[in-house]
Length: 156
Image 1 (cartoon, rainbow, N blue to C red):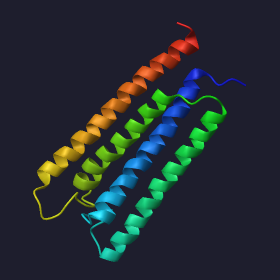
Image 2: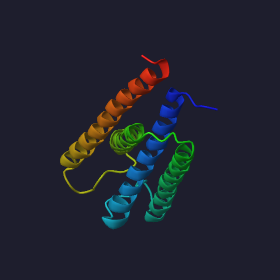
Image 3: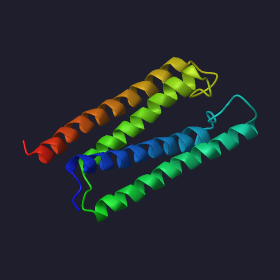
């Protein structure tokens, strides 16, 4: 049974989106939590609670990554892998996660900050500009590849 191009496009986007979420969460966890010790996922309690929250956050990043890779294997097996759509999903997932982290977790909920005891403005601006650029690039690729998939589906 042949999968319609639009359904294949969505499958590639979802696989990329999950890998984008998992990748950025993994990078955040390893660099900012473990190597630099700038913060924990949840900084409003003891260090032990912070470490447990980091472990749960790390598990989330791995579950998203493994789920993505399983979807990619299925796409490849079905000869349905579309690199640009996947990259569009990856950029969208990465940008969304980072923007969500910067705006919701850092500012709205105050679960943690990027760093403590420094002027946060340069960090926040850099963090959110990178997030917005990733997200915008992903959305642009998402739209371009969706239009291409639609043209292939309708034959126009």
